[in-house]
Image (cartoon, rainbow, N blue to C red):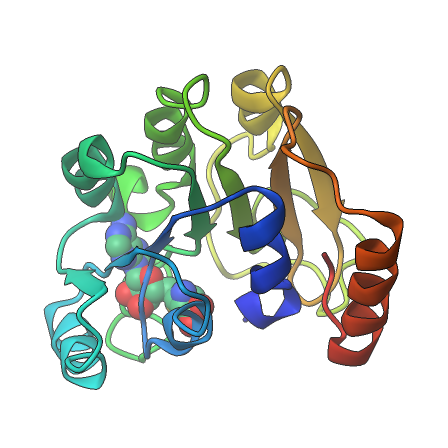
Amino acid sequence: MGSIKRFNIPRLYHQYKLQYFFETGTWKGDGLAYAAKTPFKKLYSSEIVESIAKEAEGRFKNDNRIQIINDASTNALKKYLPQIDGSCLFWLDAHFPGAEEGLQEYNQTKDETIKLPLHIELEIIASRIKRFNDVILIDDLRIYEEGGFESGNMPAHIERPANYSINFVFDLFADTHQIVKSFRNEGYLYLLPKTALSPLSASQNFYCFILDKWKKTII
Ligand SMILES: C[S@@+](CC[C@H](N)C(=O)[O-])C[C@H]1O[C@@H](n2cnc3c(N)ncnc32)[C@H](O)[C@@H]1O
């Protein structure tokens, strides 16, 4: 499993003037806990499995910026995006309900929009891209293509979408975002707005470079 810790969240937060965080797929809340170290105004995380969502609510009950949404990611995005009135960092990591927790088999959920909701999630997010400088981080690129992934290709026994590819990401975001692939872990895609605000100064960049090396982050 990939980790959002591979990304330098404070750096992205400052560079793109991000105000909100939205995660799809909470699981144990480790990604959310990492993001919550950055002073986002509000952090949302959607989790489809009720028992997992309840655990997360308990874990984060003392941070009133955090909202756990026990619903499918696409429903959560439709419901909460209209109230997110500033640029947002998205961490799209929802797939295979309950499988990491051992509650279901990877191939058990037959509804593709629940099992692998990335395409619909991105369509919903794309509806606001002209208004905000959203940054989008996507885990598990290897679901959508073969490559030299650090953790190898997707195990063959796990069913993938028919004609899998990530062309839909380019169709939706190529005009507005720089789209970058990483082959670390199970693979990541990250989408950075082309209308970047205030590029970092040379000294800030050097500092971030050193930080990146030290923390082994991707960006
Ligand atoms: C890889 S884990 C998430 C890890 C977490 N994002 C982190 O960074 O620590 C995937 C989680 O997504 C949940 N999930 C799967 N399909 C979902 C869907 N359609 N909507 C919301 N949550 C979903 C799973 O139950 C599981 O808990």
